[in-house]
Length: 413
Image (cartoon, rainbow, N blue to C red; front, side, top):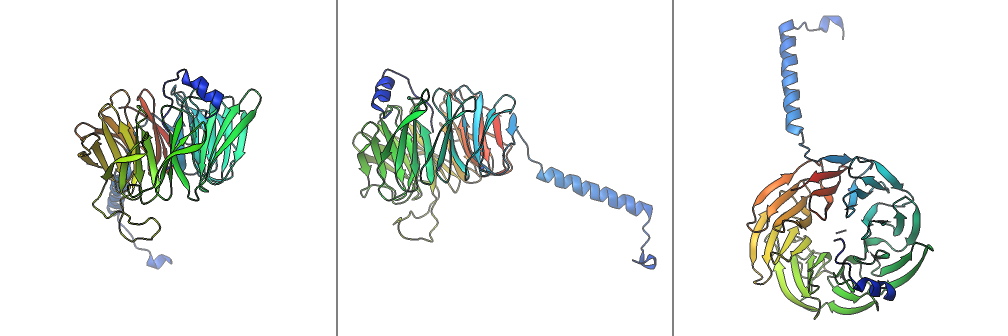
């Protein structure tokens, strides 16, 4: 649960900045004839070889980074495909080169698992955040410019247009926005009000003027970044009934997709704050009736959503491994795909928008044709579940972070 990169950089950027919204004895010895020995040795060797073949894992990655000592929880790829930043359960983050896996610099000082990492829009800065709430900002020479301490971190992201605007949300329910001045190492800060429920995930709208946040109680709020006030709160009977896990936005700034532990995904009109569609996703199980009540019923939590403006579809992935592709205009399920395990991430190909990449808890990237719902390929290499995946802007490589303590780079498609 723990973000798309930059959009068009237009004249609005100046206004945004100005207004600051901006993973034994001898008698007992039995004599064995030599031929028996040879037979035993041959049998043992064959069994050993068979076992090796059974356990061998095909690695189709082009490169692997093994700098972490524990699970790698998160990763990000610079927009020029030159660098990766990865964060792990070893309380470390590394910035490294995609070409030779060499480390540019280590990010020390974290007090807990590093759960969020991200380059800013022009790759001049990188931010890392640990679970305890420590955020650090570095330039690409490895110089630390800023650090901030807040409550337990759930999410962190850079503004898609303004290179010096950083935002983060916490388990306490509030969110923070910093405007960084790198020349003087100073900053301004604004705080988004807490409503008493964990602020779980967020996504900036493409217009750069608004941000949508999802909360632990199922509420989705759309905020104005300039004035730091709520424009719309989706909390009525049409709202989710459990934790929001993922959010996405259409390039037109109008449609927002939300996913929840309650087995549903929704489409929300950002201008009116109204839910325009609700999709029952994944396995045929009963949804959560009340987020505040414990339930023993199986619920196929929707872990990720991704909108596709070219096909006018919504892709959803669930913890039970269901991948559904929904037609937005008719609100009908076009295709239902099945991953062999839970789905952790989804991403559409930017060059071939009908191609859908899915990261699984089986350690495999599956590739589907979004028009037919057919599996057209996969990428193997990890020994454990993939916890994060980033597809390059030109859709030529994928970077993955895994429970097997490695990051890998795969060529696409």
